[in-house]
Amino acid sequence: MYLKKVLWAAAILGLLVCGFIAYQIYNAIFSPNTQFNNDQAFVYIPSDATFSDVKNVLQPLVKDLSTFEAVAERKGYHTNIKGGKFAIAKGMNNNEIINSLRSNNIPVKVSFNNQESLASLAGRISQQIEADSISLLNAFSDKVFLKEANFNDDTRLGMYLPNTYEFYWNIRAEDFRDRMHKEYQKFWNENRLDKAKKVNLSPSQVISLASIVQKETVKAEERPRVAGVYLNRVQKGILLQADPTVIYAIKKETGNYDTIIKRVLYRDLEMDSPYNTYKYSGVPPGPITMPDIASIEAVLNPEKHDYLYFVADVSNFGYHKFAKTLAQHNRNKVQYIRWLNEQKVLR
Image (tube, rainbow, N blue to C red):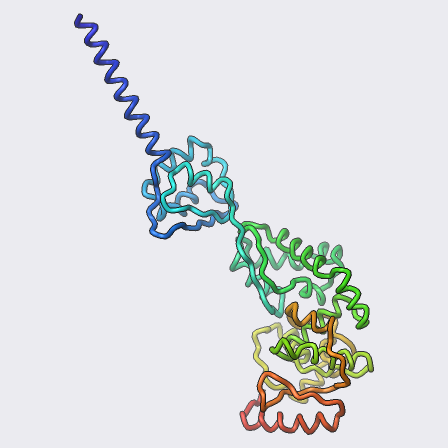
């Protein structure tokens, strides 16, 4: 009788212990384990992260790191870390957190605009994805890739079309570059290639000319007219004489693309550079900045007119005065020079 009671007591105790353990396991797996107030939090896991790195990232976001660690080990996540950007919703339990970290890599939007060098582009992109600026610049400058893609040191900047794109945060530098090349190829569809032929320019030349248009005017509605001026000069064999190309030549020569030059001096026009359109005819060998798509479209769809000259309109800032003759242009230019002198713009 006594033995029977002991056995029953042991059985009941065993059931209680098992129940307690099951309850603890259930809580560890299925109880909410977040401690932030927003609806969701985003975490960035590096591609080479260890489980220790993941725990450091999650520590401010979860209530009980030890239960997360236990469930992660049970599910095998601790030896199968994946890099990327992941969302953790408020109130998620450990099981849901691990499932999200395992299979819910979220794309990020990557934007860039009118960079003047691949180095500045690499710096801009590295702020938005995992790859650092050095690995990006190396990928952008890879000689084998440039040769296969039919670019060179002068034209390679033109492959990157300013826009907003979706990438996974942990995309490799080479994969980012390759995607940009695909976007470039997609942009140059049959319709745009046909328009480039009509203005007697290759796609690279279109982008080079568009970069000048980009620098000349911030007014998108004026760009087709500015593009028309330069195309008229190209077709007539007249030097482009575009001040932004001279400024770019100075920056390229010094390697300082942050230099601010508001006024081109006569001595600058003597600089011996293929980008100096006061000395060398035709379109420069490469773009002087990344042109907006609007500027590229302006070159492909230029305004038809007889203008050969233009200068900043000091009575309507942001816009320009256009002229068909040098005499008319010189009269317009006098007003601009007077304004520069009044403002004491010396360089």
